[in-house]
Length: 223
Image (cartoon, rainbow, N blue to C red; front, side, top):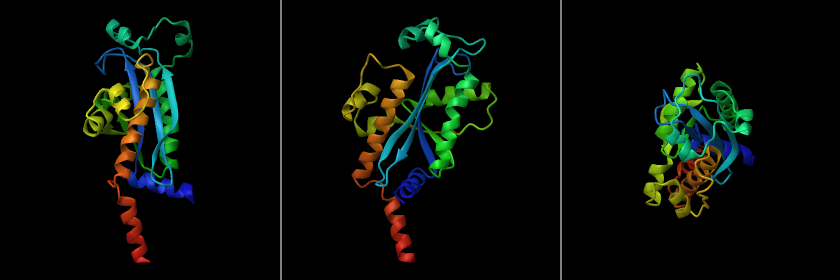
């Protein structure tokens, strides 16, 4: 029963969209030209009290697509070494990585009674643009994400905490942040997921989300 309640609450909370936190590390700022080097996604779930929680993490290294540009300044910023033997051994093609990411997201959408995923990201437009460009390059017709809507935690954190930098916003929310581990897609995605959940849950605790309560009351009155 409690799982069914949580499932219904998630579907109600975001209009049947399942929020999935995404971060990509790239070879530059041009989504059409520059390579995706790392991708990570964190699916979210909800408990019977309506609290949003991180669920599963999926993270992959990618080989640059054929003809892709990789700026040295981007490698210096992220610390990614394309010639690292271990990285070369585990890295996937874009098509393989997107398949590995999208498959469990589609399952999570169905499991939570939702119809589509909605991207959550820190400066979400950047990640969304690269994700859509990669999907188009790979000819993926069933991209589980809404094509343009997203939740931007930089904007939300600016509103809630007065901080737009991920590290500062996390600390303002009481979330530990290791600057040395930053700019890894896995690490940044997991911290962004914690931050998004903290803001959504804080809003709920302050009485800001009463939709489920109102709908339940309406159902009770109809009975």
